[in-house]
Length: 71
Image: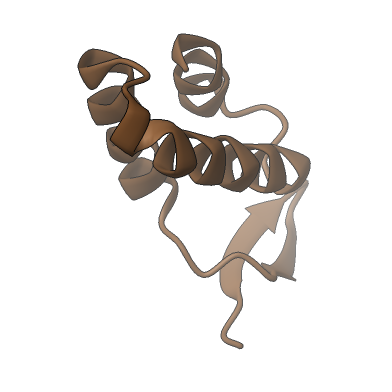
């Protein structure tokens, strides 16, 4: 699994997440706009889990927090 390189407090670290932060945010906004219909419940749950994992690695990312709350 490829990790994503991040810079945190001046140190290079590698996170296990392979998705771009902005891509995850776009997915969350699309799902929030569509609402929780029967077909998108699994997708919404998946994106919520993804955001939770990303927030563990990027706790100060305001965009991730906003899209997490939007869902």
